[in-house]
Length: 314
Image (cartoon, rainbow, N blue to C red; front, side, top):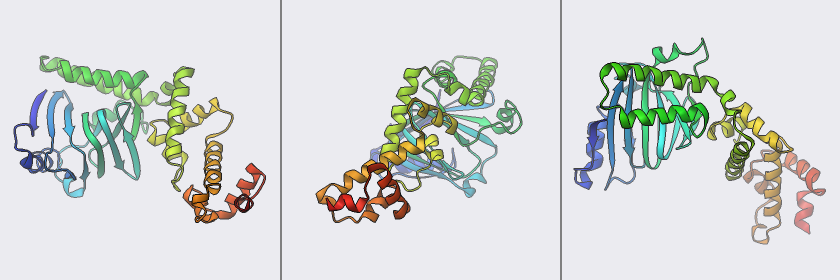
């Protein structure tokens, strides 16, 4: 891949400013904000495969934003497909948050406002795909925009490995071969995205159980979120809502029932800890995601056979 820019040969104190000037203001048209600017690291390498532009990017931790003033400078309408190899990137667009990492790819519009939150040092492969050519590979209304794709199995893994192979081996190929491979890469991506849930359900039982454990761990870490929804859980874990329900068929409760049970158990634990007696029962309920104290008391009594206040008086 051809080197576009690198901070390697610059003095550490000048790297961040050089990155802004060479890349953010000219190459990709975005704003960046990095807290650690004294020794910034980054590079961009690029290769073209017909209509598809592939970039290999290294970024220090930062926040990236594209707004209308940046979009006005763009001369093409396209999508980004991101394959993270190191670190994590949160993609915020159209009111959704996609969590991408080495096991989950994100697709979003390059021609609409977005924010990227790069967590830690991030290495990614980005594909820039023309909207018209990619849309033609889907039946009308089927093109998924602002979504994720699992890359640890099935067609998603094939697409990610195909992309990585092109990045590593594509340089010596002539233009005709590169153009053909770019078209085939779009075909594989479209097939992986179009298969969606059908590809997800091809997991064997052990893989499903592993995924379920991962989802449960994520939910446990976010039980205190008042806005925790099934849609958010599915999006943040790289699965569809239907597949989320499917995973919980391995248990004897639904997703919502499991969340309620875990929240109640966490509330019970808090209410029995002497050092937390300064918290009122209502505060405990609200901190664990309940929006109604009366509802909390009702479901708490139903589960444990006594009210939260009775437990406190013991």
